[in-house]
Amino acid sequence: MSPQQKVLIVDNDPGIREFLEISLGRMQRHTRSARTLGEAHHWLAREGFDLCLSDLRLPDGTGLELLEHIQGGQLRIPLAILSACPRPETAARALKAGAIDFLSKPVALGRLRELLNNTRPGPTPPMPATGTLLGDSAVMHKLRGQIGKLAQSQASIYISGESGSGKELVAHALHALGPRAGRAFVPVNCGAIPPELMESELFGHRKGSFSGAVEDKPGLFQAAHGGTLFLDEVADLPLAMQVKLLRALQEKAVRCIGGQQEVQVDVRILCATHKTLQAEVQAERFRQDLYYRLNVIELPVPPLRARQDDIELLATTILERLAQGTGQPLARLQPSALLALKGYDFPGNVRELENLLERAHTLCENRQIEAHDLRLASSSAHPAIASDPAQVIDLEAYLEDVERRLILQALEHTRWNRTAAAQRLSLSFRSLRYRLKKLGLD
Image (cartoon, rainbow, N blue to C red; front, side):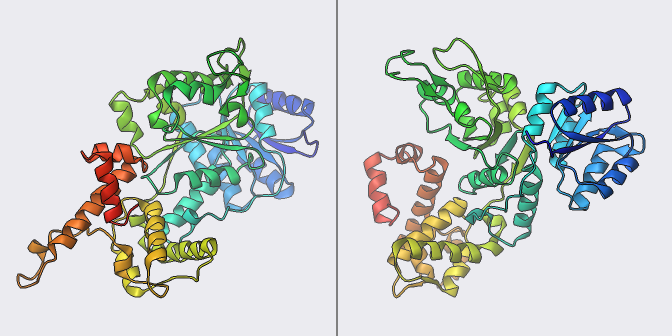
């Protein structure tokens, strides 16, 4: 604990102010108190603070107005909202605006101590340099702004978006820019763990608790203690496991398989899925109570087709990385290839762009990538309908384009699981493998 940490308390209730002053003093924190929004502005103009605790309703304004004042003045002071009658929609609005937490009055000492530990003074980490976060399009500027705000919050965030759009990299940025940046970031793909091993992976197990448990093993919740746990493809969790996850989130504690007691864990939960989670709830494949626990704030990640202006920068960055990784000379994207990329729909988003460029980087002639090197599937209407009647149509090439597009879509939907993609296309695995080789997709 740092004795230098200073907290500004803003509340009209003298009893609440006194309780917080005494509690924070015992935790070796310095405090200043304000009764109104005006008094809070007075202290903020004169002294530096590491944390602000503000009542939602003040005699001359609201805690949200104080939050806007702090953000507008670039003060970089985390603020938590206090409320005697918290409402879920108000809490969600405050957290989305940039509040780091929303606490019920009277404030539990455990929650207060946890909040202080997560807002220790320290240098503000820079925005991590990740390829998916590159771009000057309006949607990317908006996304980076939302990440900057939400990183300071401790609320659970549901990162929505299509497969390949960069949801895990957004989760990394939320962790790296927040108060837990120096602690563990633990990603787990819920769709890649067999159902019978899910509980052991998340919560751990004791030696001898089941066949094959030859030693004690901590779970991923314990590994992420003090940091962030990212549940990717959370919609793939079996219903039985959803119940156990909900309890762990509610109690902030886990019990390993074969264990007798629960162990307290302090983790921030981020989750993502390429499915529509609300639709999964309606179809009764995902528990509604868990959905509300995970989806305190939704952060949508834009698909690549919504940010076409970023394609040139992304492509250049990917090609430079490929050249460095392979030791080959840099391949140049020709105007025809860039035009083709900008006109393409990208069902697989940035991941598909990377795959297309990796193949073109390998196969192109003279380190010049032309449009035909990309082997893009055609997304236009049938040429016999749209073209000049006198135009000669290459039927084989057209059918190959259609076949390539359908196979790529199936692979994206199944996260590049070839067996599942073959089933989706009503093909045998051997037939799919042959087609992948024929179309240059293997």
